[in-house]
Amino acid sequence: QKEVEQDPGPLSVPEGAIVSLNCTYSNSAFQYFMWYRQYSRKGPELLMYTYSSGNKEDGRFTAQVDKSSKYISLFIRDSQPSDSATYLCAMSAGAGKSTFGDGTTLTVKP
Amino acid sequence: EADIYQTPRYLVIGTGKKITLECSQTMGHDKMYWYQQDPGMELHLIHYSYGVNSTEKGDLSSESTVSRIRTEHFPLTLESARPSHTSQYLCASSEDRETNYGYTFGSGTRLTVV
Image (cartoon, rainbow over all chains, first blue to last red; front, side):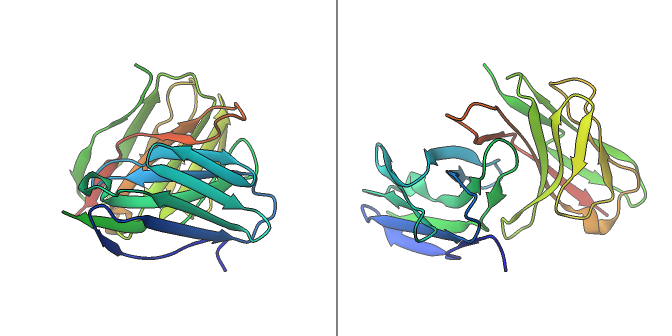
């Protein structure tokens, strides 16, 4: 069983919808949680970075971590066609290697 | 501007050839990584380095090698390319600050072995 499981998708939503992307994990040592966005034919870019449980908001994006349930989410409000990309969750126990989910491909239709 | 650079962006090469994929970063990060990304977007760690003269194999068995002679440079070499090596190769680096253990990725090298 993988340490990190990500909702597989693909996900298709109309413009303006609220999007929820989710990952679960099994390693209790994970303390740092990341979300990356990857456009086609590009490398992933770091979108959100959080430490331990709680919420973090950045514009239309909210990252949520529930360590008791080993569950993390990324919410996108007022989704735009430019949000169409693959979203990867990642997590680590500290400095060094991160463990990635398999990615969820999102399409936002105008 | 601090960044991470990969060259070439695209490469088509014949079976049996030796190739080196270049990766350089200008951020002074000690930690660097090479990932192979499948068409379904899953990332597989093939090599990593936590500093000069330090390299380790990752989770994916690979016929490649890496070197880290300078902090900013982390090249990946395939001694004998095979069609099974056809993939996208991503280089990344990270810093040691607890406020940001996330990675900065390059744009990738898309390799096709024919």
